Length: 267
Ligand code: SF4
Ligand code: SF4
View 1: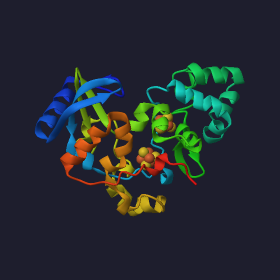
View 2 (view 1 turned 135 degrees about the vertical axis):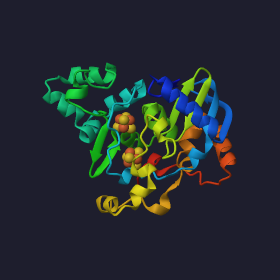
View 3 (view 1 turned 60 degrees about the vertical axis):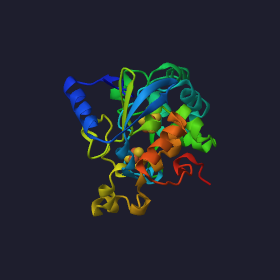
View 4 (view 1 turned 90 degrees about the horizontal axis):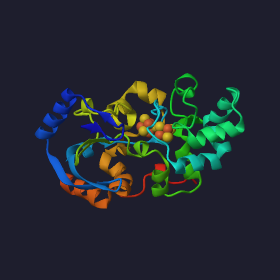
């Protein structure tokens, strides 16, 4: 067994816990097409009912505390075509200049280096994803913001950002042709590499006076919705509508399928 998006082997102990967990729960099993390959999907369907509120534009938590696993060609092109905006959001160009790099070396690094910066800067100069930024008083993904500002569609944004970031926090575990899929919740989070202890995935956090004082706007309690509702359009684009509709049918819930505001250009 391997964490698909992190490409990390599981220990035998964790494998056993995952198998035991999936043996006990109600599953939805169906063919799943992912990255042009068919898998036998084994889905922790109830986890898709988990209440969530991806109020990223009002969020003060910088959740991008690590480097994603890859940047594709489109992401690199978007950054190179919008260097000024990228720098004003992230300061990455200015920082590389201060480290003595020339404009040509910086562009070549964005084009070729795994994390858009020279490898030796990953832990010393930048300690988190180079694209994570603070815009006014909000934590944002610079690639996502640039794509939205350019008026790109949800599909174009997903095809540009690292796929892990679009799928996050959904967890995928692969074992030969089997793909185990679950939303990290308090009931199964110990099986996941992705953390769900953020306000978007933890309504109790949003209720706490301490959190409300630090985040006076956003994360309204009545805006928490089942995960499948928040991710319907993203997951439909990645796995197909049949995947999402099967989950909805199995959960017997009706949802609003409007595109999430995170993927719509602000007026
Ligand atoms: S913690 Fe959640 S709501 Fe906040 S930016 Fe990250 S994904 Fe968005
Ligand atoms: S690419 Fe964007 S969403 Fe992904 S880790 Fe970096 S800042 Fe976060």
